[in-house]
Length: 475
Image (cartoon, rainbow, N blue to C red; front, side, top):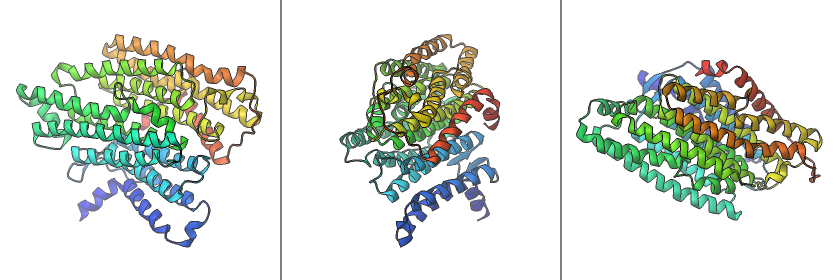
């Protein structure tokens, strides 16, 4: 019983969130749940308590629940990023015109359940826990995508997402079955031992299983050539949910960190897997940037941008040496700030979750709120490009330095070319905001909570870029 209590304390934030979902569901049966904003306040309170226990509670690092869960400083940071994203998403849903007729209870339950799935993804330490966590978050995000099913694009996106997602889960499970067949164990640490000390005759099966597993994860992370679903899903989902899709990506990269640190290491057929990942990274960032060049729809542009940034982060998995996981974590933090901030600004400018770059025409001259949004967007655009002193610059600098240190000069050059290429479409936001005529006279209204979130994200985007040690020391 004492062991169970200790193990339960290690996952106290997850337990609080699970209890919170039951609390939301139970509270819906009472009349006071009809009060406007009830589910918003209750949901935010649950997230706040979970974050508080994660930050201020006693740290329990190690393996728990028969080695099915592993917690360390890296997973703690990922859990914090996921919880914060869920917290902000709930606020965004409250001020979204797209979701004003959507059921609040179901929406908050789906978001909270998805966050819970993401939390368990980043602390999974065996194949069963990993697969259950992936399926948990996947099924709920399919439902979130189709929550505004009255929109044709939303329904289409939900169907595409579920079909692609189900197919990718099958591929991933097929690869895991190969790996299990080789080791006779579901633990990642046992897999690591088999990789290092196993017979050469099992190497082909090992590579096949790894390839299938990474292909399945490739769908989740929108890696080329498994990215086709991403633009349609981003375009069809409501804007707060498009922002929330940061969570599966953070959790997916968290899984790769765990696997490469505990299982794959540097011992797979003289690094063939690492070379393959380097090639996939180069192709992913290049296709993402080239596809974004001619996009006019903001959601599709940002979807291809996210594919490109996934390629940048993936480059670090082609080396996975000392200190690389810190660089990955920092880049995930920067990605959450700069991409999340852009989606929030888009929600403030779009009435129905749709719109192209013309929404930014003359934005800086549309009153005080317009000038605030234009200035915030300038910071996020500079960060997405990788211009100092923003977090995007330091994130890319860390990637470049690790690639050069490892001798992957060709990948660093490709990344540099892609960074220059991205300037073209990111600068469109600034050009339209500051150097075009204001043709939209609609008054811009920004709720106070959204203003505070944008101010906080913008400040962190600068502070963490100037003082990266503040973030790296936490990691």
